[in-house]
Amino acid sequence: MARILVADDAMFMRETIKKALLAGKHEVVGEADNGRTAVQQFKRTNPDLVLMDITMPQQDGLSAMTEILQGSPEARIVICSALGQEEKVMEAMAAGARDYVTKPFNADQLLAAVARALE
Amino acid sequence: MAAQHTEHEDPRLFALFLDEARTHLDQFAAGLAALAHDPGSADVVQELFRAVHSLKGGCAFAGLPALTTLLHRAEDLLGDARDGTRTLTPALQTLLAHVQALAGIQLAAVAVDGPLNEPALVALTDALVTARGAAVETAPEDTRRRTPLGALPEAQVALLVNFREDCAMPGVRAFLVLRALDGLGRVVDTVPARALITGKMLGHRLLVVLEADAERDLLTAAIKGVGEVAWVRVARGPLAAGMWVDMPAREAAARAAGPHEEHTFVRVDTEQLNALTALTTRIATAVAAAVPALVDDMTALRTAVAALHTVPAAEVLGRIPRLVQDTCLAVHKEVELLLEGEDVPLHRSLPPLLADPLLHLVRNAIDHGLEAPDVRMAAGKTACGTLHLAIRATADTVQVSVRDDGAGIDAARVLARARAAGLVAADETPAETALYRLLFAPGFSTADAVTELSGRGVGLDVVLRNIEEVLGGQVTIVTVPGEGTTFTLIMPRDGARD
Image (cartoon, rainbow over all chains, first blue to last red; front, top):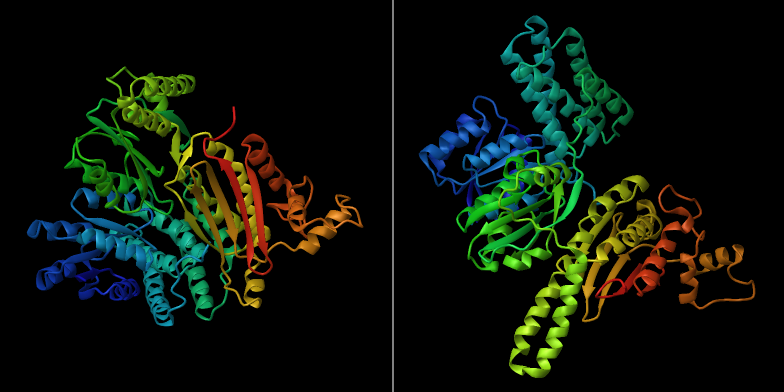
């Protein structure tokens, strides 16, 4: 079980993700609906892992991830992408993201990606 | 195939989705209004893009594919505008307003469990695609050529990685595989070439030639740790000669025509391979008689050479999920697919011979074996049927079984049809096994309505001929009324007879 920060601008998506994480016995230590809040929440909660949406207002997921990794190079970040964002996902992996899931994902796929990133 | 992941089962989440969708729809409308006043505003376009993108994401999760596609095309258009490659003309703004309105109506319908208006969604999607001035992105050329991989130096190891069929971004997974292997050795070559491993890579297969002395298990574990990997084959040095690589045709041509770099790919002639096998056997026999101490080494050599003739059963099973999905769509049924035995080694002559029989058996099982969802529910079964494909190997045989949990074969109906077709005399009643064999007769079918897919019994005839005549195998049918039918193909393990 891990302490996880969930960043996604859609509450529906955050709730879906939280439901899956709780079923997998993880703890959600923070939520953010934009990239800037995600960076702040990361500093405040020091989570084991961040689930990061790409398209978010104010600061997008890639920029937030880069900022987090600058301060904490060991941070584990899993990208939540949509179909069609292949190049952005590739960019995120090259920049140090641990893994990714593609929406729509099911709980098993999400938990598998989380488990791999925690290894 | 089982229904796409949907949150309908969780009313609270579905309500949340609808609630947020309404907010995004309002932002969509507000953005369009703002755009009318200030067509050039990058901020407005960005807001519009995000509203449509979020709406699309929610619809995908909620299991509304036609609406998701419509919004995706609208997002494409807004993406062009955001990237500065397109101006949102009044005509395009009107089109987007139609999208906003139709999405609103459809979500209102869904909120009260109504159906989506698919024709309207498809028509508007087409209009968007046309307006964007291009056909729906056509996938890059994806014809593949089967190319044998030659022997490698002892220091090099070939790793053939097959990603799962449902892996959405194989290019990204391929990138992660290379990242995982970075610490274990030096990557000498890849197929597709490294420059082609991008987010848009379509194939589900990656070959890596790695210079490394790491153990096979370590390499396999590193690759599987990347996730969404269906199977990995590992062959070091000369043993890599038995591997086949699916190479994009363009790349294969470029490699063949290109300058002769120091190369890892050498063609292996099948006849030479067969001759090598025969020679090895003769030497092994002769030497075994003369020098007993060498027997173990020779046996190991024979095993290694025999392995050159095999491919994993995943070659055969890998195509099944797509086939099942397409068939289910065509006949409006739901199927949960179970695959077993992907790692079983098959003689390389078997996959091409099994392709047609499996195609027919799978289609037949879905079309005729499994009942329609309402019929299943009425019989106290789950709406979603189960199809179980298993490949198992014994010392001498390979057994492929296709099992459905459908209604079973109606012996009385088969007999009636056989008598009507003049295949069985009116005063004759064949034993059940013989009766089921009639299903294979050309032109025989018990389907009352000949369906688009597998009517007229054409398919099963092909199954019989391939298995029994070409392979010298046998076909068995076991059926239990109300519980389902199992077709089993039993073939010699060493493939086709010469």
